[in-house]
Length: 328
Image 1 (cartoon, rainbow, N blue to C red):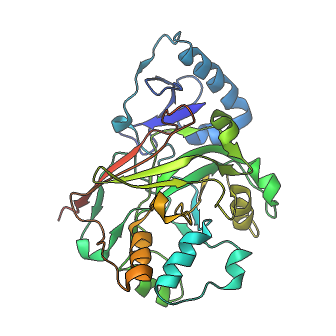
Image 2 (cartoon, helix red, strand yellow):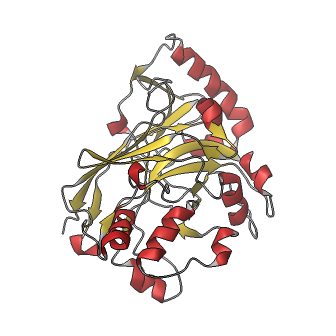
């Protein structure tokens, strides 16, 4: 099943079911008005949504309309939690090696994770606005899941069962603000602005065999200013799967239905597959040549993030954003 949230002037939007080929949609009127309602009562509300999805795919939905991702908010426009991991240790290794730092042994046993702002999440085609190019604007292409309720102490295998939906994320980073924040020893705030998500969220069953072991075994493409800079495999090199990330977050507290957990920047050891954030490209340049060559993003730049299935069709739709100056 594929779900999207359409802009209707409210904070939480209007829930709709989207066809498998993402050509048509149908409002979930009579079943739920928002995605959070579905997540709060998944066992009751998801079966009729699945029925509507089947009817839509069969071309028999009476009030179907053309699907336009530009009319979409984030699937969950505001969430109870946004917890982002760093599950691809190759990314951590590259960034630390570029500045001459070792990776602590604990990083290989216990995942890195931070809690970001979840009260204002961006739609897939919303502009990303910043006050200054000097902040070191960087995209981060990721995979994310939306969970149901997760009890304290849930183990990794049990946590996989809590995954209700999957989507793509662009976890914007302001690289020149981050070092000062981290030096304070209290985590990110200003260095991590609003995150954007794909126009469509899908159930794990929709991925078929590509969803295995809490990982999405598909390639994630990043196109910066319409030039492909990354085609990274999101599956085998994910050192901590989503079950482990969710269990880590739930070690000492419950996660409520509607919590979002991210994978962190997708990264591969084979540099020929490119990169999913500018910081990684700059780290590679530093390792190879002693200094970075590639600059961070500028106003007017665009980024497109997309994942295609084995049939070549887009799974989640594309995140297509423009970097823009914040209006005074």
